Length: 396
Image (cartoon, rainbow, N blue to C red; front, side, top):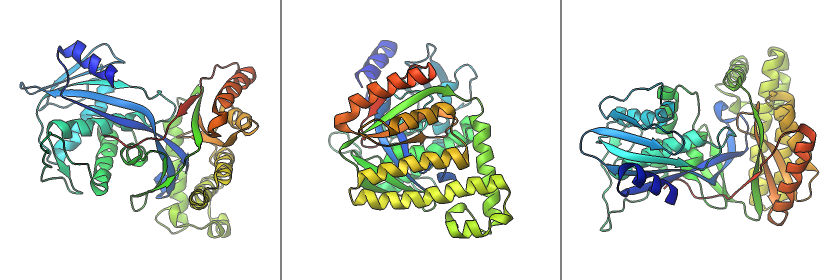
């Protein structure tokens, strides 16, 4: 937080009035199920997007970032993309959605600083969108309903706004998702913004993508460790769209709105109706949703060993049926399986490169990180810097 305050003061010459932070997110279980109205288990982690801000009176908005040398300045009445500053599109997309919902705001200055690793599926863009929405709320208080803005919340005697209730937080998540889809042009769902906004320290979130509900279940005693393969596929967007199309086509042929409504025995009985690739994608999604249900049950029973086994099973399903793994991801999971103290490991996020998430006993975390980094470099020639994550509260 001190870094973003220093950045603001260095650029604008005075201290910020407000600072907000939004955490990154990690998908623990439920790979590619959210786009099929499915269930996902996720956590908010202690890697953040910070925004420091203060109002200004000339109707302009000026954004600076610790990652990019050139600030972005635009009129609040003229929100449009600038090809030279694509990083600012996530903030602008949120502003456009707020205006669409009838939220009134004026000009402001803002400095942005992040600690979320780029490109390893930790929800950095959703965290930036969530932090942007909360920044405007700090500067120009507003409340959201499903249809738009409503009566603004009042500050208390110390100038603090009341916490955002869960129902309204879901409207914030919807706004953030719309900002990415409609303004930035990135197809995404609600999972990452929900994870950033609904996080609870030491708890896993179970997100129901059909009814937009979130439940929390304690997960204490283990470390969550991210291992970035260093592999980035340029075809992630195309591959993601291909998976989505096959799942939607399978659902139509099975006579349901989404694969959430399909049981495994029903899918197996109807296999002849589907193209081979449709069946593979559907098999993964249907099995993965069932895995999340089972994982919720064992986690409530404090059976972390079995919970970890579901992570391993999830990776195998993604690898064999969804086919969104790669050699480096498979190597990392195979290595993790044989390191003492590791309860479970799997690819996380889109796949096709990116990172694995590993559930490791706290007292074995250092040993795990040292061992997996050494073995991964021996096998692939690539350097690995595992990152241990703490499960934290949502954006504030």
